[in-house]
Length: 336
Image (cartoon, rainbow, N blue to C red; front, side, top):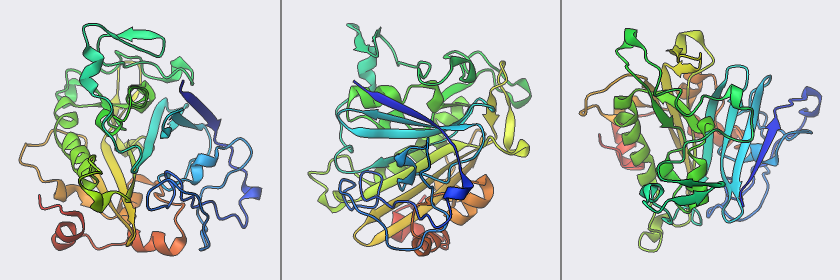
């Protein structure tokens, strides 16, 4: 049975003095295989700090700096695979700000196919038999702060030439296919943002596929990457008025931009890049490389402090890499 924990972000400034946060080497920590424990020794002045009412998970490496105020951290997990992914959801804005997750050896597996949900016999999950994708309200926060299952498809934006929006996964369904439970959780509406169809199925999907290719699902035949861990944080812009495209029929935010921050740790250390897209339709010939920025630039654009739980020296190093075609080809194998 899955367990989901929700925590109100209670940031108590008095408790942050001298705290460094934990650079745990567990899944989502800093270990080469994402599965063993440990602690940091380097200075970390901007790490998330666990205070009363906040989850230990905020010290994981995939987490950005959490916000104050009306935001909540939702931790989705399963008994079999542990932490699945985490979300920062702003109940006042009625929108998720980001979802983050880690990919490592023991969860980088194929144990489920999205098409299984469409079985004629039906699939029992979460107390219901499903004959299609299990889009549903997240049961752990109030329904009235979440978009309904049909909110996006029944909303239009004529000024932008949009007749309806798709339910755009932030943690992609295909990124979580090691089990039915793990995949099913990606269909909660707290993990969705309204997206143009051509954007969702076009350049956003291209980016998701590229990120998946940074590590391989088949660890047995591609042992080169077997001990790598990948940390991903993705979302849409909801905090600046100039970065909001508009609203759905019931006033849910439509982001004007979408982003992803990706970091990989292996025996050589850490490396990281960012993706930044305007929320619009792109031609099929659009190059992903045109939308890649370093993490420092992505932080400037989003106002989000990514990978804040790294020691300061490592964080500074990976954030300020000079993004050149040669760097992308050599380090990330990106040529388009």
